[in-house]
Image (cartoon, rainbow, N blue to C red; front, side, top):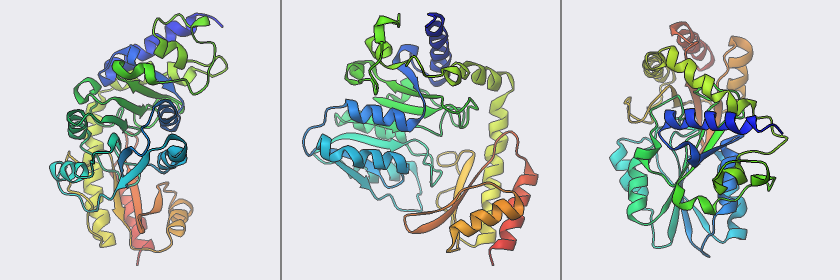
Length: 333
């Protein structure tokens, strides 16, 4: 394998590190956040009967991963019920942290939730975790390119984010950040050639960053994705999309007659929003939106309630919002 690949990976890590506020040598690329969190769970040592505190808003595949390993690893995975609606980040952080016990050693939490589309106060929760000697693991799958991210300021122990969602890099481009002090704990999901071929000085990097038969194209494209957004004034585009998301949520709630699950503020909402939908057959609604109106959005059951989640990006405008509102008026009696 040409040594050039490691130079290119270093450049991609450097560009991404500058974009998300961390050292390039504190992250490596993986295919997706599920791979990242599986790497973390398999690597960490857990005291018998210690607790991993989480919420009931977490992504299903990662909940399954935590539950899969709990017998082997000996921890308890505790999903604190965070009821809707939410009101303020301060109240949320206070209530969530009331779930900390003398057995809590880890916190696993989404930065932006997949199902409910909420921005969680992870900066504050990471701060409280540090105060209590708890290791923080943050799932930021929906964050890069969506809302501001500065990992050094947040100071989590572990953070993963997908670059293919809002940064518009190719699928299969996710990073796993690990604080220097605990990098020695992270073991490769697959043991490969390591420093036999990888010139990186860091054990953390050469053991984890590249498998010889993995196509690194998606990783290497992250630099161009960052450059593209920087050169095309993406902050103004995001601002327009956030405003469109909020006004559309008001219109959709008016059609559906359901209550909001969070305030319409920067604290909670970015470019996507979830709304309660008063319809029993979520699969039918999703199919009708797709086949009758050519609208592709998830409609799903979560915590015994039915939700619809929509989002807007650069290629959307008011006409897309109008089409969604019109379709819902026809589909929801």
